[in-house]
Length: 96
Image (cartoon, rainbow, N blue to C red; front, side, top):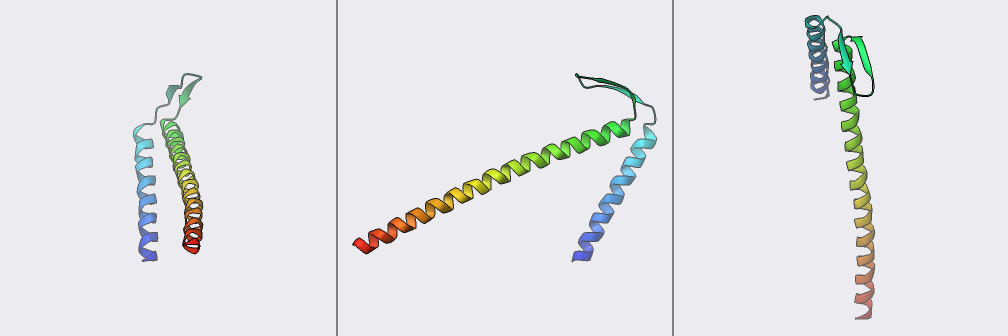
């Protein structure tokens, strides 16, 4: 099972490298990039594509981390509330 997973990851990486190589070969001419704050002249399209892909991946990673952080905080709060309710229920059973 682990070997199959490793082989599939290796195949996916090889496929991505091949797609990147075809993209680089198909678009050899430099382009001008204007991002609003700055202008870059004569940039390779593959470099722009790689940077945008990496920034998108990082943004997705940050949003996932934020969601997991909120979820874990909610989980801790619910555990605390559950312990308070259990303690209150225990004291009510003792007084009855």
